[in-house]
Image (tube, rainbow, N blue to C red; front, side):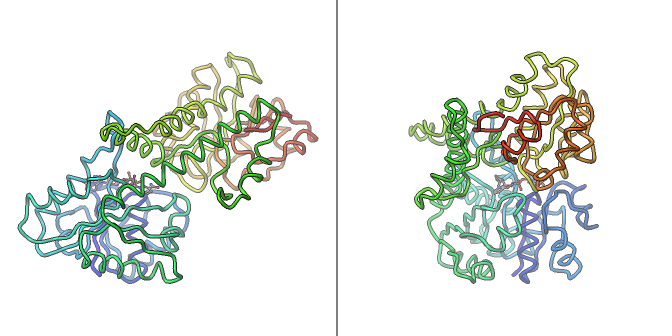
Amino acid sequence: MKVGIVGTGYVGLVVGACLAETGNEVVCADLDEKKIAGLKQNHLPIYEPGLEPLVVRNQRDGRLQFSTDVGAVVERSEVIFIAVGTPPDEDGSADLQHVLDVARTIGEHMNESKVVVTKSTVPVGTAEKVRAEIARHTKTAFHVCSNPEFLKEGAAIEDFMKPDRVVVGVDSPEAGRVIEELYAPFVRTGNPLIVMDIPSAEMTKYAANAMLATRISFMNQIARLCEAVGADVGHVRKGIGSDRRIGQAFLFPGPGYGGSCFPKDVKALIRKGETAAVPLGILKAVETANEAQKHTLFEKVQRHLGSTLKGRTVAVWGLAFKAETDDVRESPALVLVNELRAAGATVRAHDPAAIETAKHVLGTTGITYVAHAYDALEGADVLVIVTEWLEYRNPDFARVKQLLKQPLIVDGRNLYDPDRLARQGFTYDSIGRRPR
Ligand SMILES: NC(=O)c1ccc[n+]([C@@H]2O[C@H](COP(=O)([O-])OP(=O)(O)OC[C@H]3O[C@@H](n4cnc5c(N)ncnc54)[C@H](O)[C@@H]3O)[C@@H](O)[C@H]2O)c1
């Protein structure tokens, strides 16, 4: 099938590469000329495990192409995915400007009937706005679908190739058949392709992210209480997770959720509730809890080193909002680094993939970026762990102790056994567990 993807970011590039891998002829379009020029040379603009070989192979075999000419891509495509960004507007609602820009271009280049799929996360009613915008510019009949994306950065290829489920909202059986054909290779083992009406599909994506964010904030607050009353959140997590109604996944406390999705999607859903006169108090609490949680690591550092950190050096392991990505959007590490600098500390930071993206946001004042994790520790008063990268999970603790000025670790991901660290002579403070 001839597929066009408009918006070649974390989502668009993964979707394009995976659809090319299953034999479709895909062109990914983006307005960012530098990004497209790089991709034509197989230079990937993002770090995503397993993506590069897919791009290289499919580009070599002619099934995957890149273009800045969105109109031409629309004209040659039978199915067009809109995968541009939907950042928060000033009032928290999703900013649909990019989505509607693309809809206008699609309308202007609608040379024959096509299926237009909104892949971006968009509030209920957006597909109808897309339909209206396209229809303003063409008399040709077309279909609109909503196909929200559930991939996780860091595991995006696996998630797209073997999805738990595919959700699609359609306006006609024909459009449903086109989407079913495209997704057939990915749901062969029986995971469901769930077809529904368009507003329900749009709502499903927000409800899923809001539920996941709620689990995280819930566990973070339980962790705080565990610390205060002398319980261990690790045991509590196992104790509740083995209840099948609750399940094990997504119960790890941490330094607060970040990334490009949960914060903005929770905000957008709260806003949607307000405009529909259905206040979503639960989600407001989730958001407030998460904002508070992002200060936890800084507060712990202050508890150990004193409130003024002038002249102190803090080693930070991890800048990405989670492991296996270079994405630092809304990362708790950004909050931590800014608080440390404001309190007079200097920061030595390491991340296996996110140093370049972090530099764009944090700059270089009061922070030194190092290429190797141990280099961050030299002369530091404390090591703070923000991201759960695999390479931080089993370090040489003797070396860590030798490099640090004092054996102090604040761990936002509960990577280590507190008793083991205590035996090795560390002061070890993690989330929801009694400090040792
Ligand atoms: N990142 C994720 O993990 C994830 C997961 C599921 C859903 N989503 C949703 O998917 C959408 C895209 O997210 P992303 O993380 O890929 O964003 P992104 O910022 O990485 O990529 C968006 C791309 O769209 C391009 N663009 C913007 N306006 C354009 C236009 N008019 N024409 C052509 N290209 C244009 C930008 O240059 C950019 O390359 C968002 O709605 C997001 O909420 C993201």
